Image (cartoon, rainbow, N blue to C red; front, top):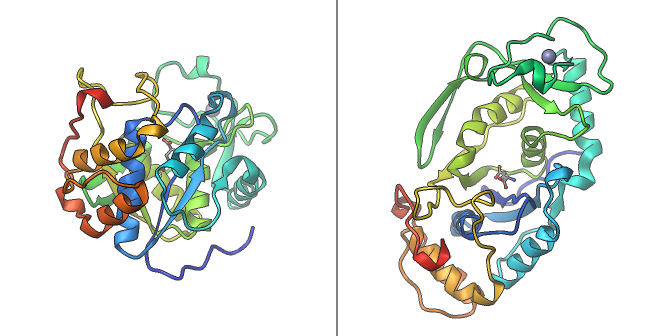
Length: 295
Ligand code: GLU
Ligand code: ZN
């Protein structure tokens, strides 16, 4: 599996989009904020495409992501990593967890579990074989807390709030929680900047990281971009795909939504350089309001 990438700087951040739809303005906010945070601390900014959930991959969205990264002229450190090329690594980690008795096979179907969001551990002691079953990670009755740089102290008791959770689905798909934790570790990530829609995944990821003896990361969850109906901007809400021909304008809007000083339109490269120099995460507002055209 190899040793984690050994850092030459103290800060290694990343942008990790899933190709489940084209990038939209909310994704741009995440890209810009994670980029400026990393580069303003003379850190590195890595890009990872989170494409393990094959049935949810949206045609051509991977190309759109790569075109956008190009058009916005982000300086990416290292090669872009694709999770679909790394399935062996994730399976090896599951094997390690299995040897330590930290995971077990679960035969419950969605129908059996019903709408109950908390898994009560039905299969924990059944000792089922691993083939063709979902694999769950055991959680404990303990409070897991972290200090988010924007959202403050966040705590959750995974056993009460969620129960043992799935790392490998019955259909063979590696769950996002596993891939994200393993890759953040192997890429030497120190800081995660992402949307607040992922806030309540974080305790799961911290717990899994603890099980694997990985160092804990620093987290900053950005307020979500909302449309005029107060709905978060998302692929599900049909947020518009970023138009690469409008890169400077979109960049200016993203920076203004993030509460940063306004900058003149120029090449995206120069605009980003200026944005990094002026970057102040404390200016990010509690809620991101968007100009009508970019909803
Ligand atoms: N791939 C996830 C998404 O696009 C983000 C993962 C992360 O930043 O931790 O929602
Ligand atoms: Zn079960």
